[in-house]
Image 1 (cartoon, rainbow, N blue to C red):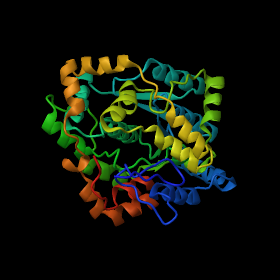
Image 2: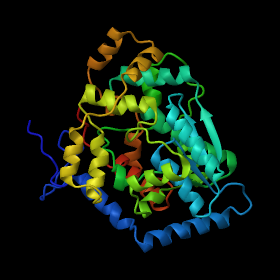
Image 3: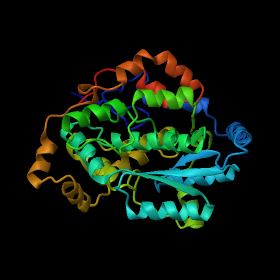
Image 4: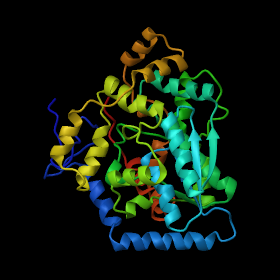
Length: 382
C-alpha cells in the first residue's frame, strides 16, 4: 500500500485516523488551524490570560491556593508554574510519582519550585502495583502503554483540587509545539485501564488513582473544576523557554520531549519505534511546522537523526516487570491489538457528544478531548 504524506506537515497515511483534503493537507493540520484561530497569541491572548487570572484571584481571596499546576520536571510544566506566578497567582504544584522519575526530572521540580517559593503536593503510587498495571498493557499488545501515567496524572490533579478546594487546573499542553496526538496512536480512559488490568494484571488495584466515569462527571459537572491551557494563548517558543529556565532556575534539559520519565522514554524512544514502527517525534515536529517555528525541510532532516535512548532503561523494564530476555522478546512479537479490542468509555463518549461539547465550551474539558474522543472514529490501524 502506498503511503501518502501530508503536503504541509510530516503526518502520513500510516496513521489510521488520518484523512486528506483536496489540497493534500491532513485533518490534523486543519484541527490546528481551528485551534490557532480560536486562541490568538497577540494582545488578545495576553488580555485573555490577564482576565482569567483576575477572575481566579477574585474567587480565591480567602483560600491558600488559586490554581493547581501539574509538574513533571519537564519544560512545559516548569514554565507553567513560572507563568502562574507571573500572572500573580498562588499555584500549588502537583506531581504524580509513578516511581519511574529520572533523577534530572526530580531535581528540576525542586529547583524551580524552591526558587519560585511554590508548595508541592506529591501522590506516590505503590511501585509493585503500578508496574503490574504497566506490564498488563505490554501483555495486551496495544500501543497505548503510557495510558496509566496519563490517567493517573489527570486523576491526581482533580484529587488535589478536591483536597485543597481549588476550582482551576493549569495544563501545560501547547498544540503549537506538541500538536494533537492521533487517537490511532494514543488513547486513554479509566475503563480502558480497568479492563486491560482485569485481563492481564496479577495484583489488586489499590493505590492507583483510577478515573471511573462517575468520578470524572463529579469533578467536571458537580465540582465544576475548570481545565485551562495558558500556553494556547501565548507565543510559546520552546527553545527560548528552555534558555529562561536554565538561566534563572538551574533547570536541566533531559534530551527530548517526554524523556524526563524513564518509562515514558522507554515508550517513545524504544517500544513504539521497535514494535509499531512509530516515531512519536513526528508529532512535535509537525506541530512546530504548522506554527511556523520549523520548516518542513528542517523537520524531515530532524527525523533522520536517531532517537536518543539509554539501553539501561530496557534492562530496568525487564527487571521491574520480572521478564526474562526471551519473555520480553515474545512481547515484542505478539499480535498487535488496538484500544477497541478492549472495553473503553469511547462508545459512551460518542453518545454523549453534545454534552461534552457543552463541557468544552465551559472549559470543563479540553477542546482537544471533545474533538478526538467524542467523534465517531474508524477502526485504528495496527
